[in-house]
Amino acid sequence: GRVAMAAFVGWWAVGAGLRLPGELAYGLNFADVPSKGLEAWDAIPGWGKAQMLLFAGLIEFHDELFYSRRGTHYMRGGTPGKNMVPGLYDPLGLSTGKSAEAKARGRSSEIKNGRLAMIGVAGMWAAATLPGSVPLQPDC
View: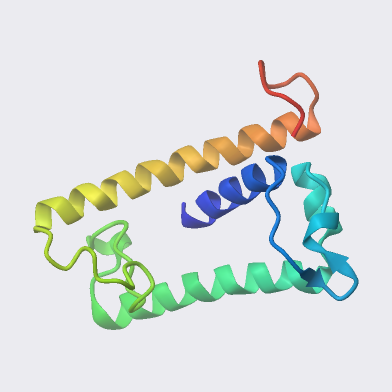
């Protein structure tokens, strides 16, 4: 879910024309990245793609590792949506004063937003690869 949220926001930001200043890689400025999602992905050097996938994989691996050592895994009756990597979910401590019910409601909302992001990424991918497959969707 969290990876899908990042993918959706990234696809949307590139499509909206938002760019960071400077170089993405040696000889490739952020401004030179195409504005369509799959074309932008194709323009990223292979090592850049590997870094993104490795980072997401490390977060997931550490989450599974912390679940096995610090609590009950969500597949074995633990709390779904609870991130076990220290400092990753709430680095500013904004949820420290919240009740258990408020935290559960927030986790539920995050899971639902992740599911919607998965649908959003799938819709943008379908619109980019199958012209006319998504009604009222501009080219992306």
